[in-house]
Length: 359
Figure (cartoon, rainbow, N blue to C red):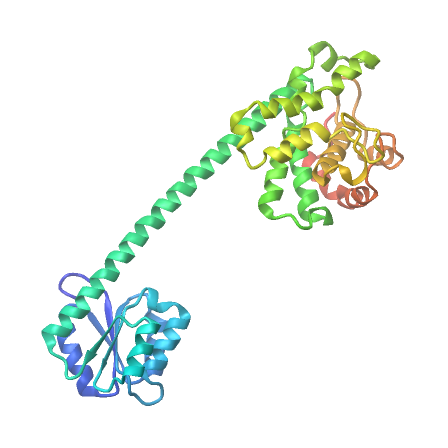
């Protein structure tokens, strides 16, 4: 063990045993020493123990692989960013020196070496790299802590959004699991079918979060209409339809929401999840591809979940009956491509109901 407890290693690369011994004698009281007779051996040592090597003392003229080739390979592998290399040579032409410095060598020391000079020059650079490594470690630790804090904030925001959306579902007499299932169905459809083509994983995450807020506008609907067990009158239905517009307005009025990555998706879904492929939906009468794919998915997921779940105005239908009603257009017109993907995925979607639809 080195007296001060260090385990740092200096790699000495020279085809001359005497030269290696001279350099080893200078540094062995302070560092562990590894030796290599040529560049190929040096590269092997670096591959095996590169994490422990704090400096390379490199001769230029050697058999098998010379020092310049070692430099080129270390530079190509990015090792010179963390391991300082010193050329220690008696034969260094101007062209060689220029290339060495351009590759990233830290210093060129002429042979024969003067022990206290070479020790001082190399120690100074090793200390510099040691300080740089320590600073980089501190920065990485701080970045990790900042990332963890950001993740906590994201989780808190998601929890608050889900809590608000769930509270609204409870207010309307629906299950608190409804918003979570809409999230899960949306995420599955975008992840496991062609509907998500072109979207990044981050975008899919934000869209799935936005889907939770699809019915946030119901907070503005009176209880008498929201929880009416029978059929709504035309006037009542107009009020109920307004939850789409109200949802968009509510999201716009929350400053923190406007800055959230999911805001654009949330606003679009809240306003347009009742639009229909044939233009007979509301509130804007959009048709076909005018409706975003995520609003289309949430629309169909909302219909399916409403059919297979018990509501104040109906009992739950079986999944088979729900699919038949959707296929026959009983719930409005949907994109044929969306329906094809949905019918293909529906057997997997049933797992979100944990043993069957709510009754």
